Image 1: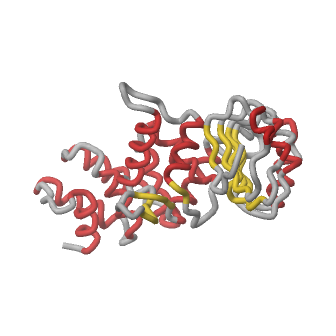
Image 2: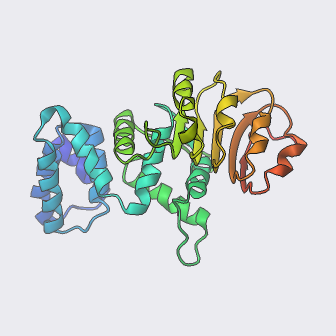
Image 3: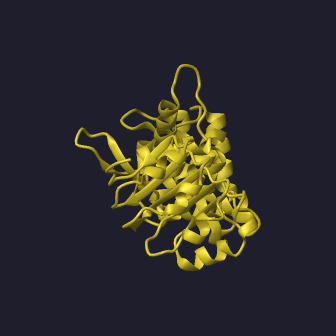
Length: 287
C-alpha cells in the first residue's frame, strides 16, 4: 500500500484496523490528496468524524475528486472540504484564527475566552461555557485544523497554532462570509500594521459599529481608533507592549472583554468598565 494511504489510515484509525470495505475507497481518497501530508491529515480528520460506512466514504471521495478539477487550486479546494463539513458551531471558531498573524501561537485559555466573549459558544445541558469551549477546541485539534504547539508540565495542551495553508483558507472564507474586516463591514477588525490602522480609521462610521478590535503588532498608534469604538465588546491588544495603560480604554464602558499587555499598574478608573467580565493582563499588578 502507498505511503499516502498508510498516513490516512493511521490518521483515521490509529492502531485499529480499517474495515476491508473501506480500504479501496480510502486508498483512492489518499491518492487524490496528491501526496500532500497536510491535505491527508485534514481529510483524515474529517473522515474520523463521519460515519464509517461505504456510502459516506464514497461521498467524501466524490467531493475530493470534484475539488481537484482545477489543478492550480487543488489543495486549497481539498482543504475547503474540511471547512464545509464542520458543524455550524465550529465554523466561526475556525475563522477567528484568521484574525491572528501567520505562525502565531495563541494560548488555549485566551482563545476560548475570545470565543465566549464573541458569543460563539452555547452552553448545552449542565456544561459551563468554558467546558463547551474546551470541547470546541478539542474538536478542531482532532480534525487537524489546529495544532498543539506547546504543552504544560502535566502534558496538557497550552497553546495552539494553524498551518499557513489552513490560515490562507481561513482568511479567504472569512472574507467571503464578511466575518473579518472587509471594506463594507467592520464587525470584527484585526490590524497588524500602521497601514492597516490608517485604512480602518478612514471609515469612522463603520468603526463605530465594530464589536471586536484586535491589534497583533507592536509600535502602532491605536489611540485614535479607540475613540471610534463606541460599541466594541472585545478589545484584544496583547500584541502590543505598552508602558502605560491607554486612558482611552476607560471610555469603553460597555466592554466585557479586555486583553492587554501593560507593564504599569492598572488605573483606579478601571471601575468605570462595569461590564468587564474577562480581563487578561500578564503583568497585572493592582486595580
